[in-house]
Length: 428
Image (cartoon, helix red, strand yellow):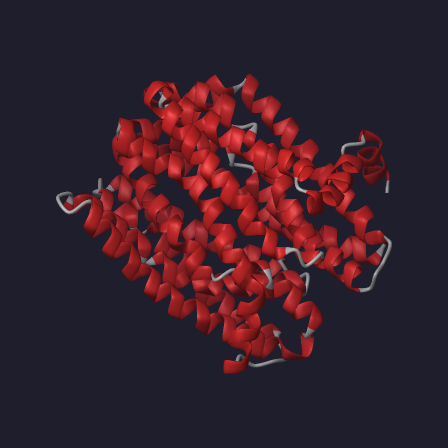
């Protein structure tokens, strides 16, 4: 019971702070989208997608494995954390240069697009400090980073209001992410120093050790990025930035509650990994419970957003974005299967099956590109939404029945679909 209370309290702080952040995002995001219009809103989305493509290279797969590293060697957390941070700072600088080179090569005649993408890419350097969140998750101290992120978002929201009031151009909006991650990063660094008994240190020996486990997640994350962001880039290049703006509006609405699922999974991950390490019989039970909670929450959201999509888009973005309504009605269902994939990745980490990730996600990425190529010319943003939904169903559910090593996880998933399990969770 004490463990359950710690998990719930950890998740509670993440969710409460994220709810406030989501409300701010609703209001400020709506105003920014209306001010920028579908075309400029689509350009910001394009820059975000380009940066997202190199994010897996910058992160080196470390966010997916650090909790396990801390679980196995808590006495070396200072070396693990310090070495990981240096690795991400170096890869962050390299990634910024990669973005600059790619955008300059593919958009040589479009100076505005190049500048927007470069300004947006600066956030990659500050995102190295996100690794500290893994330590706070391990310690079940997510209250601290949650408050930090909320304060940061309040500051960034005030900055966005300033941009709107003073009618600034798109370049000012391109640096919003850098400000946000900069505030969060340095705050987490300070909080780690205050709360950890170990000082940060760099050990070259740990570079090889950390990379030996995390490397599988680089390609896997790149494949996920491809089928999460290819649609934005293909829409921009094939049917225009306006259509990408409609798609971006639908994506923002569909993922508005994503933080809830992330908070629950992040809070349960250390417990599940600890039970697996101790060969505790609660390991599979907790995984089934996690599947149960996540799936039924996502289904409830999908039904609600499908029924009220017209009202949601109209309130948030206005009549100029009504073309986003059918896109949202398709896209919101992908969250159900995306959440299944997030829980499956916890199982993959616990079972040391990381080498399978890149194969799974490669299949999804290729399928996504193929369907987008066929549907976008005919259906535009709605075609991209259908491609995303199909990819998630195939990658996170169907492959689990086809690929033999994944069938054990699908059995745990099926047990999690039992509604009686959901009732038992709420009774306890």
